[in-house]
Length: 288
Image 1: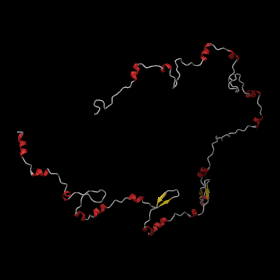
Image 2: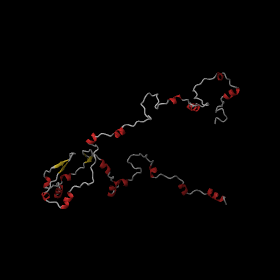
Image 3: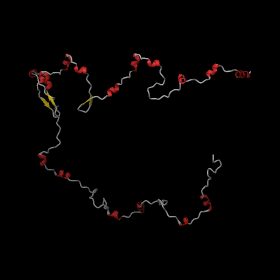
């Protein structure tokens, strides 16, 4: 049963459809008409060839509107424009005025709003001014006649009185104190003179500076003639260096004659020989 399909396939011949599908796929009309031309990047030619109908066709209005480039408002704002420089150094761009605005005439309402605000006749007259210490001046307002002739009420008069000082308030005392003539001519009693004298100390703690080798405090004769006991003498000795202390060794030291005349043993000479290693290409398998 297994040999029947093999015999069937070996005896059957391929159909025309199988032969058509077994062929490689063609690249379209461009390969039939001729070899494809070489593409060059950067030019305005399309990759696909356009038909004659597409070249003669006219776009609609909608397509023309969509084909327009989008305006770049940022570039318009970056264009160089005339600028006005203030006194502080800051610049302000000057906008261009349209011709219609230059030749146009304002309405009566605009002319009325453009007029400056006028003050009353009392303010238009020259008024005296008060000049401060910094140089700035402040105008002094004039008082009306009705205000000069009016009489204030009792409440206004009570509020106009200055604030009174507290009866228990005392003015700050001056720093300097004046001595009365009686205190200047007064004489102290013997007790006051005794208390005014400086105190004399028996134990003199401070002495006049003398020579540097002199002691600050005086040494008594008994202390000079005294003899120290053995314990005091032992404590007075300086600290001794340990017996096992070794000073720093010099970087260069002399070699002893025994070391110079010494001869190495055969074992030492054998150990001093370098190890001889064979070359890599002489080793077994070194040529691999």
